[in-house]
Length: 306
Ligand code: GDP
Ligand code: ZN
Image (cartoon, rainbow, N blue to C red; front, top):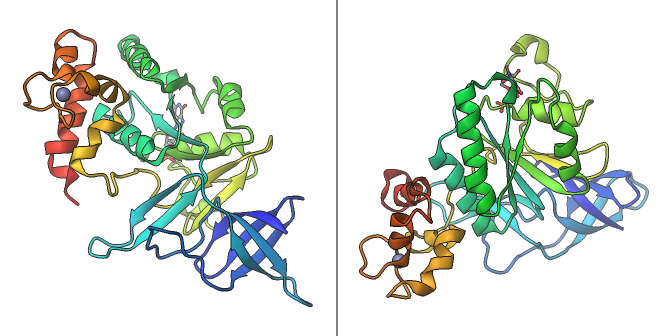
């Protein structure tokens, strides 16, 4: 039977068959993917073949289909092994807020570089629309204009008021998506709204009342009522720049990549090289200074050290 892995605990996997039935599965044999040394052979989102075990309720995963994409993180700082967080993602939603808390531009750009590198389309979801001041709305609109021009779809929502949630739901329909963003931006509230019976813990609920309800300890994805899945995986909330070398980073800024052919040097890093078309574009207001500053932060900044 064919199915998709919806949960992984390390040794057991939950697989959703095409008919909507769920099965507890184990692995048999080796699942090596070229080029990756990973601590987990199979991840949430993987498409697999599996067979029911004779006389038992459980099943065995026998084959793993090629992945469209996957996101990984280093298993530990010292090891060369990686941990695959999720596979076959259709969308990465970055939940952004202008207040309570305010998401920094550096954080947004770092996330977008990561999703570009993983080849996962990214959408910016501006949440908490209901509490913004006039000034904050103005800033939000400027950001939307900036990021829309770069090719990232932007959506203003309020999880609390249900504003634009229908649009959000239709973007997610029949897709495998992940929600990232700082703690407190409203990811759990949004997901609870989209999947009413899921009862994700939000920051407001006290530990006591949330006991026995869902807590994220392993990778898992949840079915949307209208079809599709949302992945809820620890470590996915703030995607890092795993395995992206400094020299490569500018390739994941679409506006810089577009200028590269016009730079004097074909390996221009757009920092202090003569004849740099990116620097000219910034001077002419064609490339946003904020994006360039984020770029410099990633290339030169402390936080890029692995
Ligand atoms: P998470 O850490 O990203 O999962 O954030 P939570 O979903 O736990 O939300 C953090 C806080 O923000 C909670 O107190 C929510 O009630 C609140 N919150 C979430 N969405 C909205 C919204 O659209 N408007 C307002 N005003 N508050 C919200
Ligand atoms: Zn250049």
